[in-house]
Image (cartoon, rainbow, N blue to C red; front, side, top):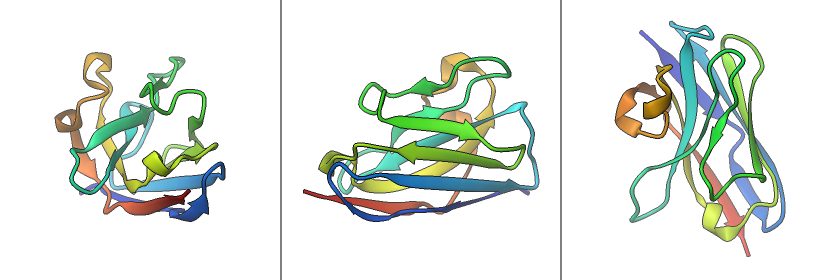
Length: 124
């Protein structure tokens, strides 16, 4: 059984920064893709970022490119550094684990395991 636990959410002013963390247990390793998604009230869950295959570049949504950075600390832990936050970044952020298939990296249904989510609120 895979468990993913997110932490690091909170409330910040526009222009501020937050660092989210996700710790996985039960099935870990570089062979699995770790991704971040977010869901704002009344909206569908959307892709934010995910790590690339070993030696490959991370993948980012256009809306967060150059502001967010995903990094893998070890086999169990992945971080999402969020800088220059905007009010439109307000959402519940979810960590997810899926297969390392690049064509499906942005597709929520390709991720088998999800965390419980952590709230990020950006005040204007």
